[in-house]
Image 1 (tube, rainbow, N blue to C red):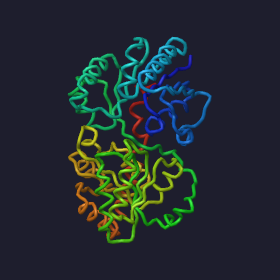
Image 2: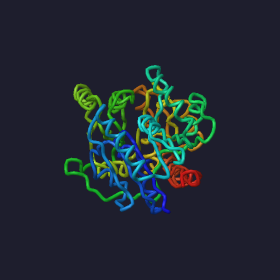
Image 3: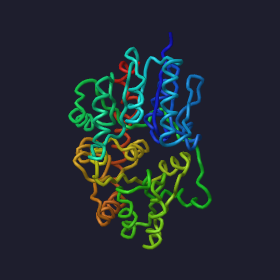
Amino acid sequence: MKKKFLISIWSDPSNYINLLFLINHIVRKKIKVILVCQKIERKEDFYYFVKKSNYLKVIEVKQKNKIGYLFFYKYKFNLIKKFKPDTLISINFISLFFSSLIYKKKIKWIYYNFDFNLAKKLNLHNLLEKKIVRSVNYVFLPSNSRVSIYKKEFNKKNNIYPIHNCFSKYFNVKKYKFPKKYKFLDKRRYLVRLGSFYNFHYLEELAYSTKFWKKDYYLVMAGKSYDNYFSKLSNYVKNNKLKKVILLENISYKFWFKLLMNAKAGFALYQPINISHKLMGGTSQKLNNYIFANIPSIVSKSKDTIKFNKNYNTSIITDGDYKQIAEKTNYILKNKKNYQSKVIRNKQAFLKTFNFEEQIKDLEKLIF
């Protein structure tokens, strides 16, 4: 009898690239998968990664808040009874919590936590998680450093494994032409910062640093906006007359990957406000975008990123000060030998370690 997987996430799955590659990986084995998730805002982005297949069914919960939770639970409850999955994969806490209400011992249960937080306001949340994970067969986390902390804080000593947020070796970027307005970007004279527009990413400092860039390069920042941050940053750029900064909101993945593959280098900056932001070495989706594209990155300084960079030498480390960001940017643009060395190290990091196939290799027997 063929295996069946039920995967659930209380979010738009398009934001979780590793999850999309995992779905492809399972479906490629001709295993039936049902994905229960929040509404997918842009279907073309989801299917940019996930291949359409008769083995995959997607159930979207279009309701929000408490009503959405009820429907999320209802779909999962009915599927446990009717679909009868062999394996249950719960992504992040909300999915874990509702899965705990319907879980049956004969089902293999995997918890994939992309982003835990030890803030005091989440004490109840984390207490519940600590109790629930006792029943989980396996826990996956996006880095070795997060595994170490999770073991200690959630008292889960065994069957917990790292799987970094990486691109597949078989992922193909689709051809795309820049809109006429941005045709000048074909000259590759820009650096990118791809990811959410939100607080605690040194975005204002990064934008302001362009005033001190020695070379005639643009900074392109693109991604989804939260809490109206795109508008705030747009006003900041306008008020400070930052003419080298281009801001793009809610672009398609076609546009995203054209920007990525054409860029000179990329930024991945995090203020150390929580566990996630402190432990971004090899974990950050931004960083792994740049590793996939084989371009150097400028990343924020932390013990974790310093340790990562000592091992792989893919990046240049910076503080969050605009002057130092500008200094590091000028260095990477002026020093051709160092730049080419970083390009080679990023390519090696991707081919040898930071690709989905390498990451999933040791977990195959656990999942299947």
